[in-house]
Image 1 (cartoon, rainbow, N blue to C red):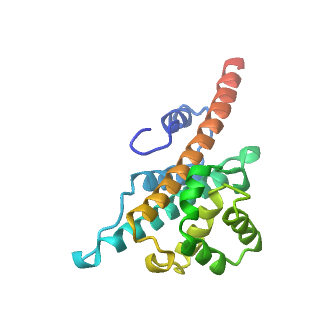
Image 2 (cartoon, rainbow, N blue to C red):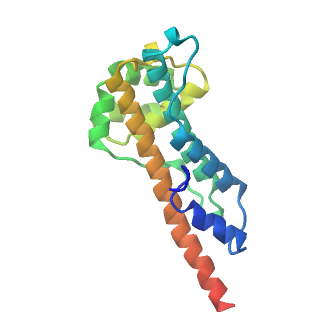
Image 3 (cartoon, rainbow, N blue to C red):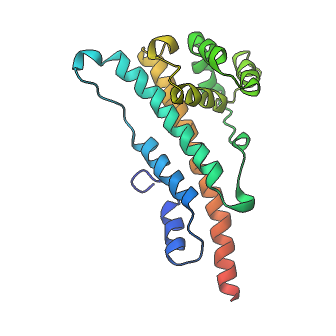
Length: 199
């Protein structure tokens, strides 16, 4: 990983410079958002008396927000037939799912505040243990952070353990995006180098 960018970003950038692939605003947006999420280490408030638990919890929520936004940027930024629906970004992680399920208040808040029936069904499936796909939790958190309908107190993410579970969630989403981007690059760069050889 170069300075927080996805693993194959240097290869993609070089192929772009060499004119083996077309420049993509969508993929540039993904790389910038991914980098912001990867390098984000939290917020610092003034005065310092506000900090502590509030900073830790809100930093964790913001990191999930940034990580999910990067995944969304990738899904929208992939060209042509490579474009993916976010449903393809499945992250089944039972260990992480158990940690997140320990925060009943967070999950109840997400289900109460989300307006998408499909996402509510998926969250209910997650809460009941029928699914361990943590990507739905990230999606709901991103939605509530973006609309300003989640707070550190309401989501009960003040404790170190609960904030760390969300940081692990953000890392899992970033890893999923990195993997998807690398799969795309491996396919696309192989295809472009093959067609360059045929010329």
